Image (cartoon, rainbow, N blue to C red; front, side, top):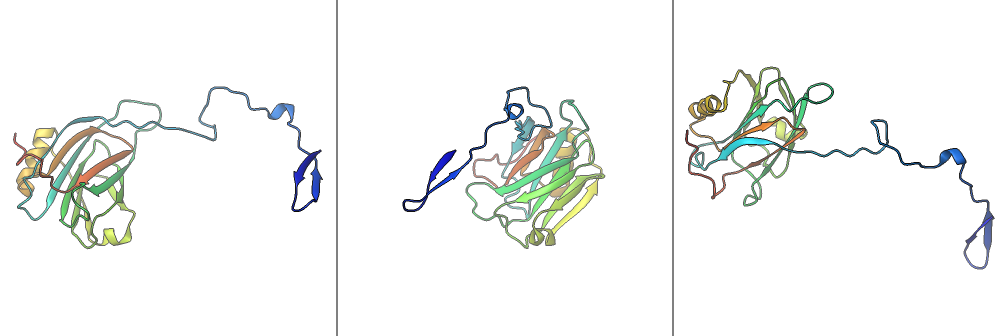
Amino acid sequence: MGVIEGFGDAERRFPLPSPEPSARCELSPVNASHPVQALMESFTVLSGCASRGTMGLPQEVHVLNLRTADPGPGQPQREVALHLNPISSVHIHHKPVVFLLNSPQPLVWHLKTERLATGVSRLFLVSEGSVVQFSSGNFSLSAETEERSFPHGNEHLLNWARKEYGAVTSFTELKIARNIYIKVGEGKFYLVSIND
């Protein structure tokens, strides 16, 4: 019997459960059915650049050129969470933005935003078969998504974006990851323009 001190001088007595021999926790390798799972994420940026080339233009242009991830177990990845928030020097981002999201296979882009003004035009150009899902109702009212067939290769894609929009704010080539983070805004330490 165990004893719990109650209020005042009263005591309550209750039986303490004894552990069952088969209910012991024994250490063993963890598999997919274990109730606690930990994942390590890594990001492999292959190449990229950032510039102030869009400062005099009506919109920023951010290009993501995804590459296939290293082969792993299971099905190829079909979803990416795209996290958008402003650079540290910008409290709330107000400038229109074009996002060019090129991927080697159709993806569902789950958009997660912080500190982006509502009612501002944002255009998401995605590879054929891809879609963008917005988590915020207000954000989706001023955003458009268009499917495009993009040129292959970094230089061709960068030149296409420049020809289409006049300049590029950032260009990033990276391996597909579950989460991708983009800082929007034009930093004073960025290059004046992205050159060939």
